[in-house]
Each structure stands twice: as C-alpha cells, then as structure tokens.
Length: 83
Image (cartoon, rainbow, N blue to C red):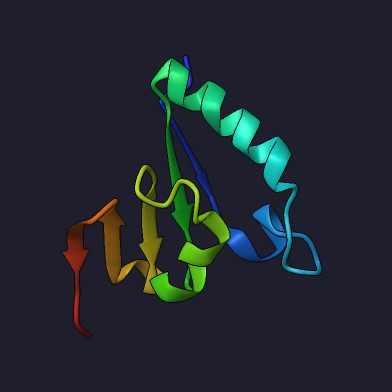
C-alpha cells in the first residue's frame, strides 16, 4: 500500500513548458486521498512559486520548499528554517 507520493517539480512533475495535465492529476489525487496516501511537493523553489500550481488542493497537501527550509501542510507551518 502506498502511503506517500513525493514529487519534484521542475523537469519531473512539470513538463518543459512548466505545465501538467491538471484534470488527470486531480483524478489521481482523488484516488490517492481515498486510499489515505499523502501527496508532497518537494522543490528548491519558494512556496509562493509552487502553491499556484495546486490552487484546488493546496490546503490538503504538504509542501517542502526553499530547498527544505520551509515545510507546510495546509495553513500549518511545520518547519521554517533560517540560514
């Protein structure tokens, strides 16, 4: 059973035009949610750059951004490091 799916954005989740098939992904995400699996976006990019890609579900997923310096899920900050 899959418990967590973590994706990098640039060149992995997003295509060369910085896009993805949103309709297809939201269907997959719904099945993940029903099975209890977590979806995590992990990127060196800033949260403010990542969140707009997931407007419909950003309150339900976890973001690891800023090269790991910021982690949040929904409106909850889990970790915010200052270097």
